[in-house]
Length: 405
Figure 1 (cartoon, rainbow, N blue to C red):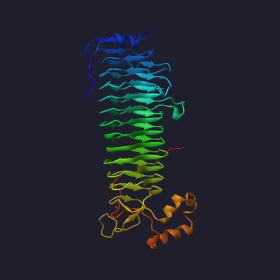
Figure 2: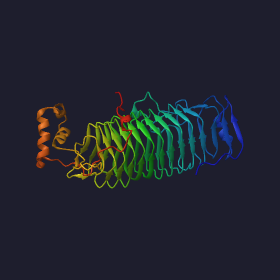
Figure 3: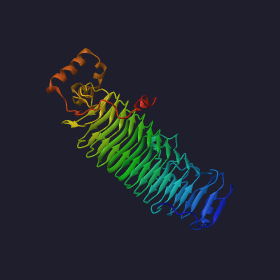
Figure 4: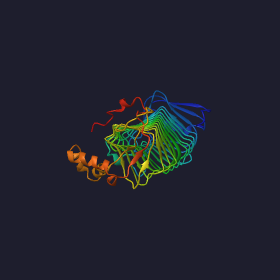
């Protein structure tokens, strides 16, 4: 898979010359190389060519329209600073706009700066977007910015190794399937990832930090979400909303307000994740049942679980740093179950001002009474075989990964 290699003539564009004119004169398969310099123009690529920057030339759109617009398959764009798109959200102004049918495009090793949308990718198959640095219009309000990489109606995309900041959302994905999102960094955004209505995709090795929300995966199924890191986000680390038949494994969620926010998620495998130093480790509600949750570490979250449900859910084989049971036979499994919630937890969620009294004798007495009288017991997450030791030996390095503001 991938764009064709240059097979035709080589053209060189020097400072003072026009990139657009060279592209217009090129034939399919040609290589258009651009020397280092500042070029203020708009480029439309309507044939399969390679557009390559030598020494990182700058292409500015002068704050009007799209800087580069791709209208053909098998186009390669690499090695440029692309900047100064227009500010029109309705027109979807972008640094690089790839139109429907422009299959197998390759966009790599570019810097996109002060663009509304970094890239708009629509109606295409097998695009590769790798190792680009994307920053938005920082002086705009977040709601008035575009997204770093916007995918709509794509198939087989590979979004790998990009660094995205100061746009609205980092990677926005809708109706896009069989894609790989790997090794991307997303920071100082509304959502690192805003993602919905897309199936059979892999999210692997991405890092989302210092955003409002980290990864937001919504209205989806058949996802693999593994080895990601989400830390220091002011709302959630990873949101799983209306998610089915997916694997969520080996992720780190640290120092967020909520580590995981799980809403209407069923029949998923959630395993071997490190959930640490969040205000709430997991907020679980809206019928999120029939999930297999095992091998996770829940460490030093102020509230390990906030669970809203009518009956107990069983998550067996996890480590809980606030577990106070014992292990008489030394098999590293607690002898009594761990229960995440009691009636005091429920009251503090319903009446937040109660937290001011958490250390008072009356509330401590209520904890004790709730433990002694099952009639006062609230539905809870129950771990019947809690681990006595964490799975992640390096968990301490994730303490204190929080935003300053």
